[in-house]
Length: 100
Image 1: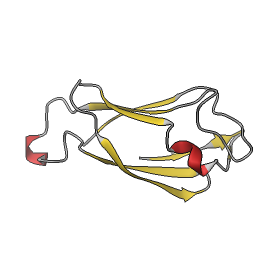
Image 2: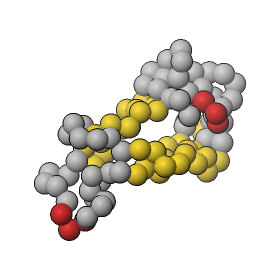
Image 3: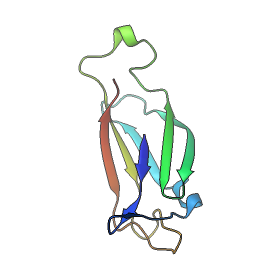
């Protein structure tokens, strides 16, 4: 998953180290949540997450029905991710997705 951060319609440089403890990935079906293999900054405003242990990719021919729903949360607020000027993300950014 790739996320680009914007302010006022323009990409904003992020404090690159602020992402490491400020995300959460959950499997909403209640099974084991996937892990994050890697976090890569494509540039100073765009981050890419690589996941492992997702329910649907081990055996594609036996995918669950319906597809598993996941939630990625980027933590905001006082302890959350910040830009290069120290401005915090106002609130959590939540992204729901299904693996195909």
